[in-house]
Image (tube, rainbow, N blue to C red; front, side, top):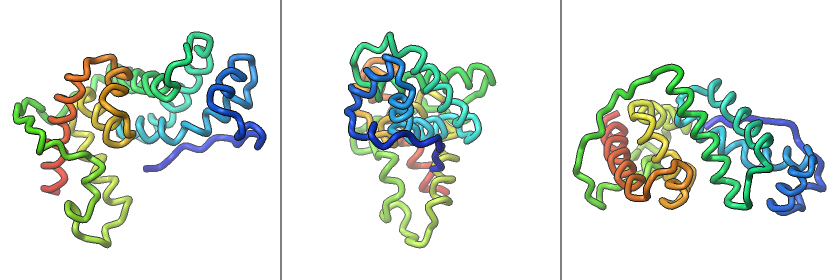
Length: 201
């Protein structure tokens, strides 16, 4: 998916660890925080774009995520910085849906959650699912995004975090502040419906 681009920073900061960059940022080093932005901007942008389905809104969410993070750095308590950023970004995505009162198109009431049906979204681009080797990446991304747009926000957020951002169940649960069991059940339903939608495209 398309990625947001921001200003580059001083080369010397690339040698610092993430913890050192966070500490420097807390002490007012804007260049250190800009390096953190460079490290995470693409992942935050891509996650937001998949959840909200609008590249302009995703750009705004990305910028607001890092602005919020910078203003709240004193409250960050040395946990997983990536998870913290994802939590801020997903909250902003939910805010977008609440403001625009968007409604899901697809019902996810299917209770058939057999483990063999848990097909990761990342597998949808494999030759076994899309045998046409010449299909362009952009076209595939459009198909995936169109399918994602038909899920409600809760299921979309889970599948984006786990299948596209490679979060494990525990991290996704922490980001979304829901039980791991809820992550698994939402993911199972979302994968099943996405699989049907993509195979029938």
